[in-house]
View 1 (tube, rainbow, N blue to C red):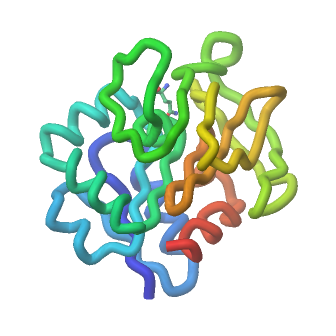
View 2: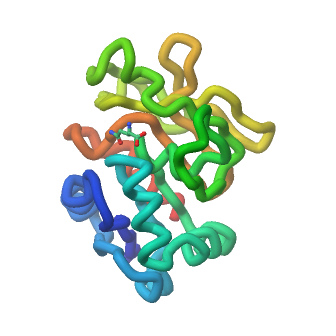
Length: 188
Ligand code: GLN
């Protein structure tokens, strides 16, 4: 049995829990307190509002504990706002980021042209034609050498992996396709 936490501060929490529980041998746990991290194999940082989530991460004393969790090699999946939080820099530096991956992020990168859209993506290591929902989504503008870029829209990187950290610009939990979740849980 794998125990996977979903950071339960703000955003798309219940959708991740539902999708995790639809997989075999996974127990999903809503996480609000640092003590809860000890029993987990992996943690999802969901989409929502990255400024709000980052404030609540600090308020709940989770900033250093999440960094340590990542350093221990435990799996982390950051989706949308979660990708912003896992990044190292953003264009306007308005979010205090966890810097778990060597990526620069453009917040709301797609948001200015189109607020929300759905498409299908070929994702390296995971699969072809994976449905992906983008909601005021960020993209990766720069990735360090340790980062493996897994999917693109036009020239923009929208999914990447650096060792135990997986990030995507979109919301895999809002579709019926659980391949990304399955890949993440297996990697935990
Ligand atoms: N635009 C949001 C942010 O940067 C992310 C949107 C989302 O998670 N769907 O915080």
